[in-house]
Length: 216
Image 1 (cartoon, helix red, strand yellow):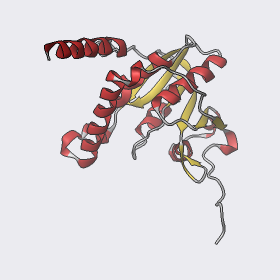
Image 2 (cartoon, helix red, strand yellow; image 1 turned 180 degrees about the vertical axis):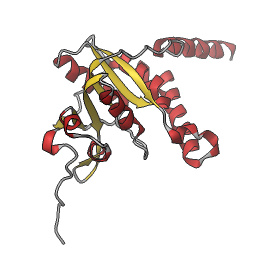
Image 3 (cartoon, helix red, strand yellow; image 1 turned 90 degrees about the vertical axis):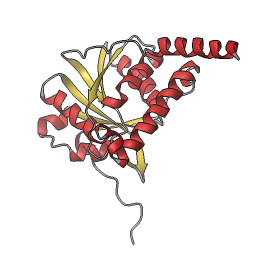
Image 4 (cartoon, helix red, strand yellow; image 1 turned 30 degrees about the vertical axis):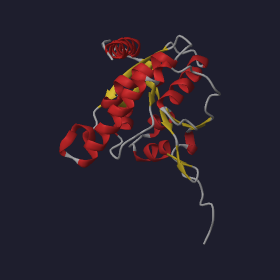
């Protein structure tokens, strides 16, 4: 029993070191060509709003909104590109990255491939503050190109409610479960398989919802 406890303790310690539990967060750069807003928005759209702030403060040249499919050809990125108060210039500097990603790891692999192809050396990745540590750990684990992804945390009001609120409690349980799973198991698994499919929306296509699939 003591031997098993010792093995588990060593495994947890190595996993913690490997995933960067004790590593301090990298400071965001003053400027980067691209800022990528990860999917997984809450009702407030805090990630998209933080990305818009970076664009307006000229800390990034282009805002990229990642989005997975809600259904019927509608992507989350369509919703937030419609909701953000983008002026005409900001619209030309914003695009949607609609993809078949199903996890942060998928988004990280896809981003690493795309931004490396664009010649970027540093990309700002915007996500909710509670998701920031896991995002940084996943990107460090998955990125192979040499491109550096620096996480910019966006405050999330639902998370900040904590145990006082039903949605806050749900988020706490879900996020800490995901952190534990990433720590003890998923970060050890090999990274392989095809990249998710991706299409881009920009210009007149930005935020444009698809036509109905049928007419009553």
